[in-house]
Image 1: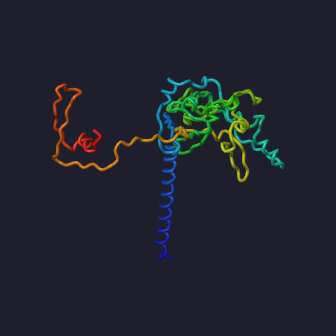
Image 2: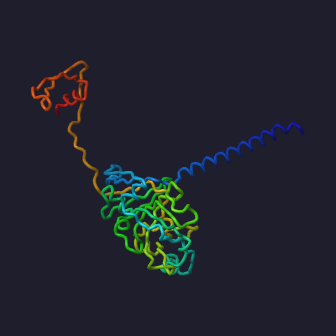
Image 3: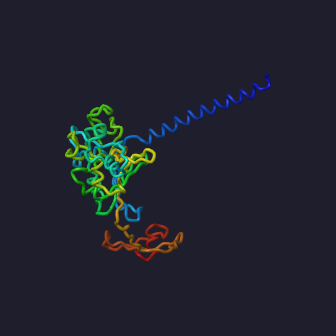
Length: 305
């Protein structure tokens, strides 16, 4: 009877150790996730060449600079809404599709209140690094790695129904955030992408970026769906990227060509010198002795000096 006791204790200790390990692992994952999903206060705008690597221009700005130097979108009072999935079915596929796109914009809208937000037009941000050309795309990237791509037409050629794409850095009017908060004072989802659509379609009279708005404004490859099994439900809430850290223009511009003045070996001899005559600051043309193992010596060795 007692001969099995040590084995039982060892098994119990092993199980307890495994429980502790799993608990610690869960805490680590939770902490990493929380850190990665922190609100952002700065955004880096980059324009890449057509090779997808070469940086043509780049700048980093914070929300304080944006508020002070670029046009502010939103008045801090008007609320803006997106639209969630419309969970309706129909035996006829065409009818079901239209039910889910919901052109009337009357379902799952008021629950998707983005708040009385203020921010900066993404178009104005792109212009900081030279802007976009027709046919190009912009990549909006979050600090947690999530990213979404949008077409030039939706950044620069938007209709009033969809409205401008806005990088929001201020929020008010929602109980989930402190009143009048910025990303570092309580806007925990900022900086966030929100569309400032008009109020012409929905029966509620609110500024709502509806699913059908996006259907009509964007090419199919930019539509967003919520999936439940094999079922697809259009939604615009999924386009609202949080914690934005980067806006990257994927331009068609070729990478700048670097002028190469010299491409070859340079031999420098330790202790060797040469004479240089100064003219610009020395009217007498005094000669100076310079070591070969200096930057000026290396330039002399190329024959370009």
